[in-house]
Length: 318
Image (cartoon, rainbow, N blue to C red; front, side, top):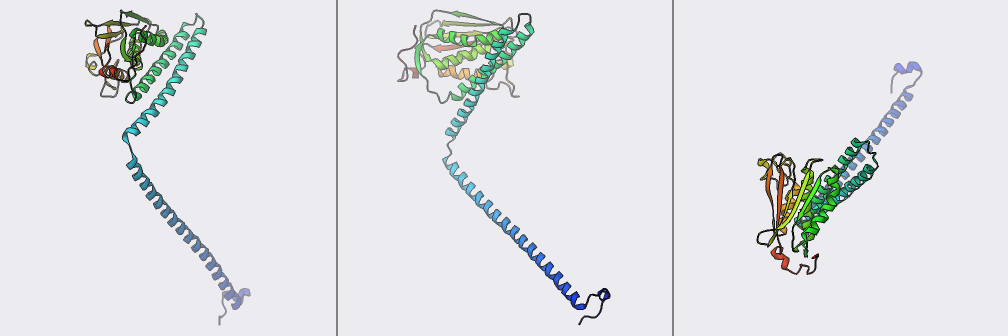
């Protein structure tokens, strides 16, 4: 039996005190039970999440093993190059649109505002330069997968088509293109590859010739034996340093990642195209501040494979 305590002086009996303690213990028990259940739920949820993560990891590992078994490096490379070429194509189309818009704006500039005209031409020139670089990238990406189509055609007509396409670029830099076409018979070649080869070199000559005083010269002639054709493309730009001349046909002509004057992906692609056509691309000479002369040498009958079943019997022979 409880004896009197301090609370009895406040009129609280021992029975009431006992009931109060029992109630307090009940509340604490309920609270502890709720906390315990919540803690168990959290532990269970964590355990389930861990099990699910382990299952996902095992499933992912299984998919990786299956994908590795199905992995085809050649197909993966082809798809990668195809996607890159598509991006470059869309990027190039936008650049060409910018250049065309600049041409329209330039025509509206009053004659008394030459500075505005020069600025607009500068924007157009940069857009066209990037546009032609994107074309080189697209062609280079598809070179390994494209089958040649051999046909008989006149090189002069191909050159004239390339010059017509690059005329706007030359106009934005205010330079002149001079041509000298000798009497040439049709040759057997691939039209697309020959077009890209000439485009790279002529665009390169326009790019590195000085503005306002630049001259790009294109000459076409047969060799002494008449079995090959020679296409010379010359500019009057700054020339190529002697230490860079042996590396200009590499994608990156310097070890520090910087491209040497005249070098880069374009010339590497052009040399590969010349080889595909059964010929070669050479740097004949380059003088400081005296420009550079590049030479394309191609067989009139095309490479040995041009006589196969893919050869087109009729071509542009007029």
